[in-house]
Length: 120
Image (cartoon, rainbow, N blue to C red; front, side):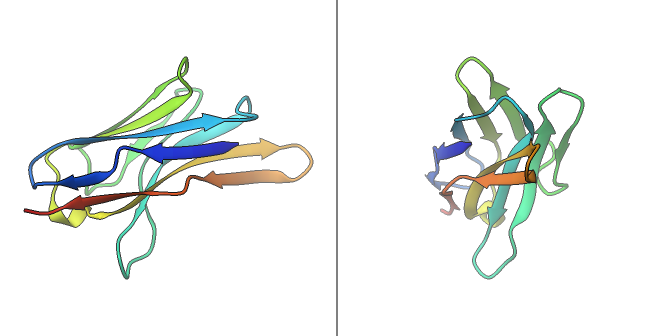
């Protein structure tokens, strides 16, 4: 599975931004997907994720009501719509996909990351 993020940039506080994650390869058995972020000097943290069967979606408390995670199956693309951005949202954002492989078990794939900077 190959993941490529795009859409990061510099925005002012209160504005919006949409990140995209295009996935390819053996995507049939992906179990769940989502977004993490890592700010300088901090650990990578989960922002939002969902199971591909549609049974579960979760958000970090810090982004609930401001961020929305969606997926377009026809475009093989996952999105993170971010609204009312705050300076503390500044981080490198990574998309991930978890897949169960019969021969090796669970595998987690990461994109290369996209920088989001919220500053006036």
